[in-house]
View: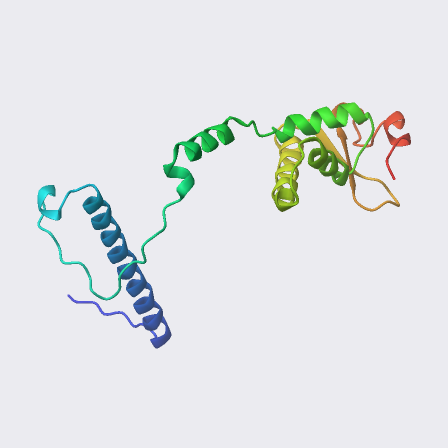
Length: 180
């Protein structure tokens, strides 16, 4: 018993576009594999499979190789770059909070990180996001940091969990020294 399904014209067009794109990507992948094999000195016949004709529709643009990855100096530079330790933002945030011994805003944490690690301006946004993620992890997962909204002030202030009472409000000695 044969079944038939009804497909609207817009869905049919979407399906055609999707499968055309999938076919193009597959053909491109095959071409890339052939190019790699030819660079290795292996033809399609030596793989045990018959060689398939390459699609003639379009050719891949040759990709320029990164000079730093092929030279000794480039390899040394990459190795040195890997050796640089990236800061662990959770540890940094906890150390900063404990050194301040007061509730702070996230902007203070970010400014201190940028200054301490000498982070260039083009990496600022990524660093800010990493600090936000670290702060969120310290709040939600590790439960080491608490965020608090001070009545009458904009933004949230953050402090170590032990600085807060059981009701979630900061103890008086930490509330008095809040940054402006």
